[in-house]
Each structure stands twice: as structure tokens, then as C-alpha cells.
Image (cartoon, rainbow, N blue to C red; front, side):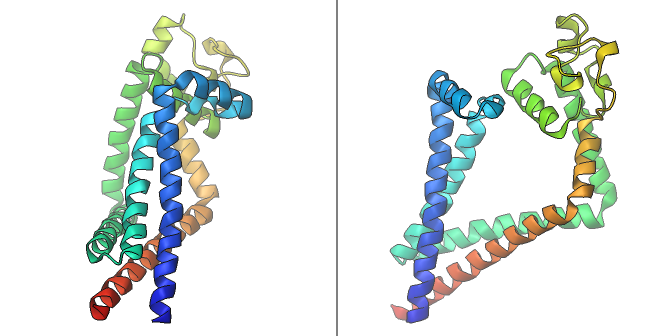
Length: 241
């Protein structure tokens, strides 16, 4: 009984934290979409380097809603000893875990499939850069943030911007992410040390592979622990009733 109470408390506390975190992320996402002006003023004063992230409100709303659901199921399932909630919590975590394992197997064992995926990604990314960069605010912000953080230009290289919407409507110039410290630049002013974002990301993975692997392993361990605790509580509730 002591072990059951301990697991119940840990389940409640852990998912309570997830619930509050999801509520905060959801609130920020809604705030950004409903009252973006005041959010921009506060964010600009507190953390100017994050100003480019203000247009990802929908992503915040989606992530916040998912975390809210998971926290609610785990927290209420443990507190009310609801077998239905605990089972649903277990099933959702199991689906996520299986999807992650399947993705890892595909990447590790089927390199040809991974290559096909990369080719499709290249096609989509280049098309997106040529047609939507500078036209759609959300996509422009995401690309600007990516190029700034990875110190890259374009998906394959700066040539992805040639004959693009941005290139044609901004006097044949390239975005700030491709330039030496400057908002926009012509071809002869490009920062030639910057590679495309795909090779930059591949370089990042090769340099930080152990860290990425450790984080992925940690997430899998947490998911396994959450499933185990939910399953134990589910079985204990049935035996106690």
C-alpha cells in the first residue's frame, strides 16, 4: 500500500508539472494570436533575441494543448484512481514510443528510405524558400530563426534564393542570414563561409551526436517509466476495488 501511495503521488506531481507547463505554453500561444502587440513589447524588452519567434503562436497552442491533455489524464487518473484515464494515458505514451522507435529503425536500418525522405524534404524546402519566403510571415520567421541559429543560408546553399519571390521583389538581394552583418545584400556581398542549413544541421548532428542520443535516450526512459507507473497503478486499482 505504501508503494501504491508513493507511485500515485509521483504520478500526480510529475503530470501536474506537465499540466502547468502545457497551460503556460497554451496561454502564451493564445496571447500571441489574440494580443500580439503587447506580447511583442514585453518580449522585446525582456529578450530581444527571441523577437523572431512571435509568429509561431499556433505551434505553441498545439504543443500546449497536447501537454495539457497528457497532464490532465495522468494527474486526474492518479488522483481519482480512474482506470479509464490511466489506460488512455498509457496508450498515448505507448503510441508515441512506438512511433519514435519506428522512426529510429527506419533511419538506422533503411538508409535508402531515409534518403528518399531527405530528397522529398529538399524538394519541399527549396520550393518553400522560392515561393513563400518573404511572402508568408510565419514561414519567413521560421526560416530566419533557423538560418540565424545554425548560421546557414538557404536549404542547400544561397542559390536556393536565386529567382525566388524574395530575390525578385527585393532588388536581387539575399536575406540577412546569407550576408555579412547587414539586413540584405547583393551576390558579391554574401558571407561565403555560410553553408546551407541541411549540411549545417548534419554538421551539428555529427558534432553533438552523443548529446542528441543522450537526450533521445532520456526521453525514451521517461516514457517507459511513465508507462510502467501508469500500468502498475491501473493493475493496483483493479486489485484494491
